[in-house]
Image (cartoon, rainbow, N blue to C red; front, side, top):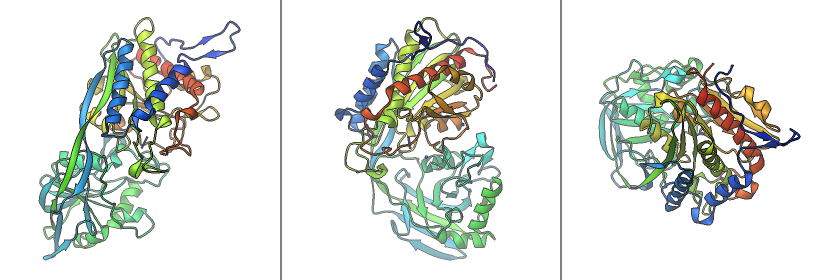
Length: 492
């Protein structure tokens, strides 16, 4: 994990009681569930780092598990940058009021590792946060034409420090990912992107550039992308009769975009030179057909941090096994695939068992999947995401839902010891379900919470509470069955 009423149709009871009707028996065997986690966190998996052979081993392991249940696993390849470095040809010039200024690479501007290579020059359009989010009723590109232009875009999201933001409160959504913003700009016709940091929301004068990241990340987005200091754009806004800080505060106040084209006297010329190595990674999936062409998605990311590098919160250079994050969710998908593939009869709807690569470096696998779906997304009635479900404490599990309200609540009483928090936000929304939210697919997100071993080498299999997680997976399976059998409108 990297930065949610009544029932109809058949509900299958997914648990059994002993003769005295007092002891709960989960559908998943805790010891088998834990064996998957041990396999995914073994030394030969090397922390399942993105772009590594270790991640390939994990993909093969998942596929073999699916195959052993009689399913037909498939791989969905996509390309990410495994290593990148700046070349010598990075340049930036901008002209305001007839005055042309140059900036020095790395010190006064920096190319982003996923940038396209080449030149871009021309007029500039301010495109707010660079976000198109119909699910939140927000679009920075509404009413502004950026075709053939360079767009200036704020990093992060509107109302990022507001617990009650229309986005996900203090949790970043997939729209905050810089690569997603760059792709959105390209899809709107822009030929280059410049990012600046929204100083008005920082409460400080921290206008530093983010360092160039050399390790694994998103692939080439196809247009030049850089970051420059917000202070260097002040004269641009002054010529347009605006203030960047005022505009930013106004957007945060009412969530109304304030995009505009800068006057003709403002122009930019930039060149990006990056040397990169690319590598193919794979999402792994298997489909269990139902009686109709509609289906439920159950997903989890199987990648982790490898040896930590820039994402480690512990000791970089040491294997980060990622037992809870997210071998726990991956093993959950595997065991649910086992159970549903072996139960008698079929649900009305199919089930897509889907595991993602590249989550830790920007939701890359799920973002790629929703733009290249194996099955039509309009036929998906819900996406259920399992991320960090192995460290349940005092029975508490966060459940974030969007578009499928009321499905889980009637079921929780069956599961002793579980205390689902259905309040809507676990304060941690940056996981693969957000890619599906952006495409209008209803979601459920199960998450047992952060802990002191998060993104550290100490996130090991022996700290997983397999018994409590097996109980949670029974609730998830029950939820899947309800979604798989009830009427088309699952939101009610």
